[in-house]
Amino acid sequence: MIKPLIEYDFALALPRDWEERWTEAKRLARQYGFSVDRRGNMIKISGPVSGVITVVDGRGYVRITKKPFYMSFRQIENKIRKYLSKVA
Image (cartoon, rainbow, N blue to C red):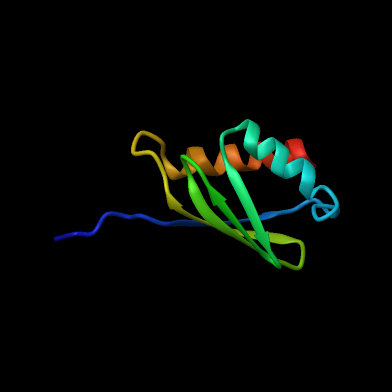
């Protein structure tokens, strides 16, 4: 049996002041129906799409671990990039 792809990884640049804007990022996430929890350099995303962002040297390494069946991983990546551009 072939196991379906259930995780998707990609990297992106984060705004330099992302830590200073964390409160705003959390507020925007709630507006979109998500919760975000930060512990050090790990950000857990929960909601219709779930995953983890690991921050290293100003880059976010994103791993999507749950998604609706009707959305492609690429669509989710594009939405995350759009969301982060609003925070930037």
